[in-house]
Length: 370
Image 1 (cartoon, rainbow, N blue to C red):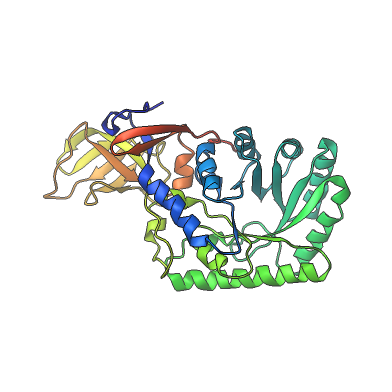
Image 2: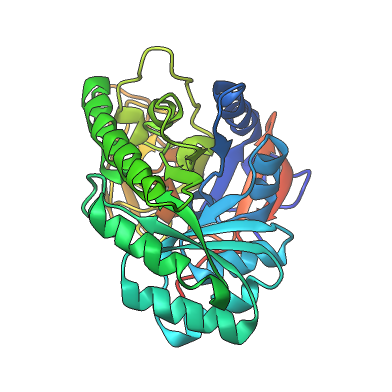
């Protein structure tokens, strides 16, 4: 554990993942306020934090439950007392399906499908476990990842799920997440992408309901677009995840007018371990301390510095001419490029307020790949 409650921030061992609790709490409140009075439910995506303590705070701010991506994540959250979990992924394979169906005996558990064979396998697992699984049909609304085409293919799958009611499957509705839209930089680009997603979701919902099958839920949305889905009239549930932490990549988005501003609350706390030249310093956080899929981290406390290179255990900072030099032992906050995979590198989140450690939360679902 990198810290104890009551420690000064300066004494937190590095590299560590720290959370500015004031900013974190503002983010929780900002999302809750943004959807207050709207006819949508909040189901935040817990793959961003993998931390049951954070999930409990999200529920205290009005969320009905959480999303996650893996059965192992769902198990970690249910074990910690979270009783409503949607696995926003297709789950394939006998062992995983057995675990999922077993979990549904002690919590409300949902899952996605985009294949009729998978529907039959889910039904068999639920029947053996004597449990009920809520099943949503995933439609491809533009991200071109998982999901059947909107319209008739989705109706066919909805019928397949509904036909398995006696085996423990309950058709819940549609999953319509436009992940590719979250990091389109300009508001007009995001609006255009979500408009197409909304049309696909609405038309497919109407087709399913016209066939006599209730389609109560249309779920999706992320931190970059959730207000668009919220105001669409088509979505009933929202799944933003990164809003609690934010990252350098989200920071590159131009904000929509009227959208809430989420503050950066997540940082990699790192120490300068070498200063071999006036224009270069080396910190103890590298590829094993932050994800670089969305670029190298930013230096929060010294924006004139640039992280130019990372290897396993080293981060190289460039110090421009005329800037204050870094010294061995200096500590800095880095803004990760992508918060989700960065969190998955750590066992603990260190909550800091007014320069002191207020809490240390376990990242209980870290590494839950199965």
